Length: 282
Image (tube, rainbow, N blue to C red):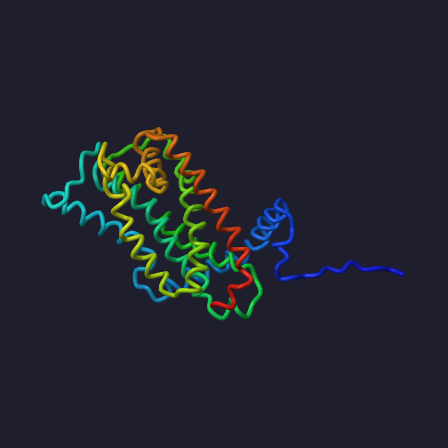
């Protein structure tokens, strides 16, 4: 008598397999979901800019307005930016480019599950695809801002260091840190809808606590706080590759890269554990 292989699916299967097998399962699931992630990204991108007059150009206007305000405050004596060796607009735009990848990504990923609505409750698919696809918006705006920064460099006649070619690699730790936090915040938003508003306030406040628009002083409270802030090291390292051609704090930068990887892997795994309960909360 011929026997047939029977596959039994259970909702908590990923919790019962071994440690090595579970990571293999996660990466295979991500690989199989690549088409779904792409389609979800196209849907979100089209929906965001469908009836927008300027569309993706808002990614250009926002940093220009922010830099313009700080240039005005600096020249009027209201705010002292400090001593820098390059034109301030170029300095600030580099910082804002990498910062926006974090801030925009955190905002859109935290709202990704709730925004899907009935899709989460009625269709069985990897919910992590929603979070990953939402990060596509942040990546597109990052690329647009990077093009704007190149134009500003040409206007001011700035020649970046050769290490600027490593900027796509330098953006990966920021992406992983944002995505890892986004996994957790997406779950939290499913429970508390006002999480998104808290994230917006948090990123707005954090903008002034990290060296995005001004350099880190040699001493003081601001310098002490940023010495232990992994995001600060990632931003400074990104800027160092453009202007200096070397890392001013290699230990801090690579330590922050490792921290970003740990945050991503931890919350990705945490998301997979909690995923079966997501539909009950949305």
